[in-house]
Length: 299
Image (cartoon, rainbow, N blue to C red; front, side):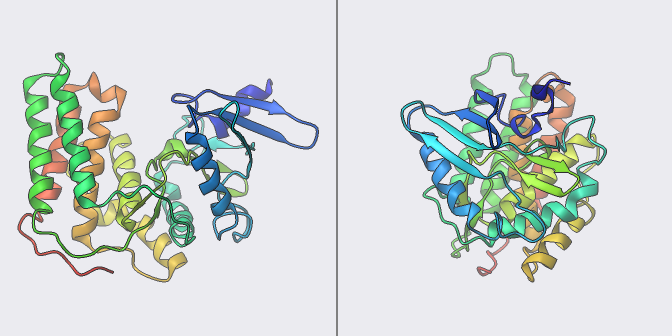
C-alpha cells in the first residue's frame, strides 16, 4: 500500500493547505505550506504546546504531532508524521461520540497547557463572526429566502443572549477548529491535528465545536439534548482538569454559535436546504433559552 494512502495526519490540512508526506532517514514527516509568515506563528505556538502537558510530557503519549522546523524562505512547516485515522473517516472503527470522553481529556490538557497566543475570540468577537457568516450567506444569490431568514434569526438570538454580558471571562488557549476531522485515532490513543486556528477563548468554545459536529453528523433531526450530547465530553474534561468546565447556559449559547458555523461551512448542508434550516433552528432555540439572562460570574 502506498504510504500516501496512510498519511491520515495530513487529512485535516489537505483541503485548505498544500501538505505532503516525506520519508526521511530518521523520521517520516508531513510538510505543510503557509502563505507569507503565517506558518511561523503556528510553529511557535506548536513548539510551546509540545513542551506543555499536551506534548511530549503527556500521560501515555503526546496529544499532538511534534513540530520540527519552519522554513522562513518557503513558508513550510515540518512536523512529525503520526499514523492513524481521523475520527471523521468512514473507515474509522470508532465513532466520534464513542470517543468523547477521550476528546474531553485531550481538551483539558490543551486548555491547561498555559500557552498564550495573540488571537482572542471573546463573546463580542464570536457574535460579530456570526453576523459576518450571515452577510456571506446573504451575498450568495443561490441562498433561498427561508435559509437566509433562519440565519438571521439565529444571529439575533445569539446577540440577545449575550446583550447584557459584561462579566470578565477566563480565556484559555483554544483549538478553534475542533471536529472529528481534526482528531486522529490510532492504537495508542487520540491526537489533535490542525493548529491553524489557535486562539484564546472560553473553555466552552472547543466543547461546543465538537458537540455541534457530532450532532450534525448524527442527522441533526431534533433539538440537541445538551446533557446527553455533552455528558461524556464534559466528564472526560472534568476528570482530567479536576473541575467542571462550564454551566449549561454558557455551553448552550456557544453551541448555538458553533451550529451556525456548521450551517455556514458544511458543504453538504449547502445542498440540503431543509437540513440547513433544522441546524439553524436548533441554534436559535438554544440561544433563545438564555435571552435576558444575567451573565454568570467568571469561572
